[in-house]
Image (cartoon, rainbow, N blue to C red; front, top):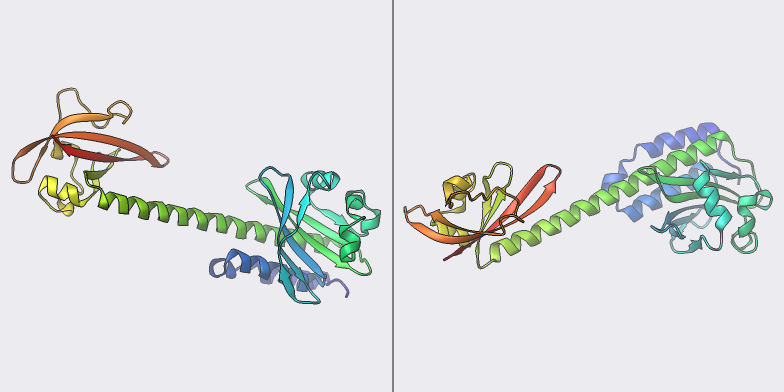
Length: 290
């Protein structure tokens, strides 16, 4: 099978770059689409995506597509201890364009197993970078009679590697959002089921963002009447006491609260703060009647 022309590769890049499937498909599906599209776009038999482990000791195959069989699979590990020259070349090169694997020094370590096992004769390996850090490699591998890689092939591989990086970044962002949602849901559940009265307070403004059912009972009003109110409106504090001080400085504080019926209730307030975004801190204030 002959390699695609420069015009065909350019058309393939334009098609892939639309990237509409990033928002719709799972990571596995996106990687499958990219490897299959890359194989069909280049006319090359094997296209695979490998992820580098955090300690950079291994490359693990996330996705492999074979053009003639139309099959996808994953698995397989390449260890830096077994292929040190290749791992060095990957870190030091913009890409590894090998027209003949039996003549290239970076491929010498593969000649006793990987290359003959799969019938690979030429390979174009493009590093995948995320935020400037090497995270993996895209491998486009010819089987059968080798043909030289053109500049268009190298640009095509770089474009696909960039799309893979984009897919991985999007996946990381989705996972981060999912973890935040899970944490938020767990917090809300614990907040609502707590046996003590609790207020969620914005540390910057000192105003209440939320209140649980126990706080409604303690203050004698609905949470909608508590939200938006300031600490000064809710508490009468001892002289020289400051709830806005860092929690470590005021782990607990005796005070009085003003109920909506006008009564004063002696309480102990415990404050726990956390930074939820740069420059923004929230506090959970637990209020125990005395």
